[in-house]
Image (cartoon, rainbow, N blue to C red; front, side, top):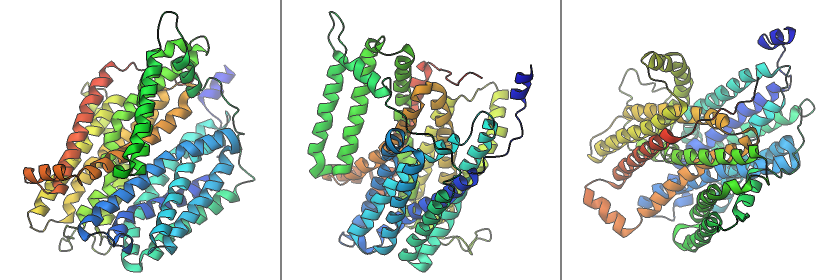
Length: 530
């Protein structure tokens, strides 16, 4: 009975003394990242880096660079997680990648007029930011044990708040710095913040709990999948292996499109084909791995494969969401700043890119509103807001947001001045969709994946954003085709308006497919026993 009481009422133990170093690091790093990210398209569209292009093509090229950068940011978590888990541990990996991150910021500040130097900086930031992305939160979790684990939720809440707090001020201030102080200083400030973040993290080095790298797991996701694909069954062929090999052949074929689509698009297509066909093939023969691997490992792989379908259906959402920092900023530049309105904060908001600050501000408001008001009200009405229902609705809301963005674009194309204030509506709808999708998906995936598969699920979740930006790059490439351009012209819409309605339709189709799959999804409960 004493033990039960102790578990029911945890001791009021203090936070581990090393936690402030991790939180301080996160606050500075997030301001650093969002600070440069949210001015990137605006800078590129008017910079000498794209001066070799006709003026009409510069906005599209700036969007391509931005979404290629985003692809890298959400691809490199695979590399960072692997290096930390297998070789160097989380602390060393975070510190070394942070130094690359700082070097990338320095390149942006020093090479504002040099294409090779600037793009090298973007690569280093994508490598550094992506490399540490899956590690800082889990490294923070390593600092807790059974005696103080009840304090971890407070720290993780602080993490999420810090991310949005940093994003809010970066989105609000950095466009002003770019406008008033120039790109060298505007990109230099995030670099200084990243350097401070690295110093703060390093300063706590003697206080951290460091979990050593794991040894190779013979029952990991990839080991089980390989066993399933290669295993023979008496009197039966290996259709799953044939499916995986076919996917591999298609992936190799994707690289022949490099002259037309570019390396990044082709590499992402190849990765997607390998994951899709390899996953289908593994699912077809997965039971053959039972016996060679524990049933828990085999069932864990099956749960991951099911969750991958959920993640795949969220990629259209990310293709819409990430364009708020590219397409919507470029749209805002065509709109009129409503300085004549008494309620508009003219002393502060002077640039269209600052509208992005609405996103983190609304996130901080919507999460408590949903949990305290909206969800309880829906339950009283007899509607249970399950994780899958919330995610499906979030994808649909992103489509609605883009319908309104398209309507705004029609008004701009009509020639009349359109107030920038109208962008508040699509921003609010998109942010509501983000809270329903992003804030729900990780908890859902955690509950569905077995204990041994939770790490691989995190890696696949980050890839969802990579493929979201891939759809944007593919769409941008397609509108350079004469047949597509002629079709758009035949609709009577401008290219911008057509693409906005296209992406809205993309989201609605994804939401419908998500709803249909969710009806047959077998829910699991893989939280560990108390």
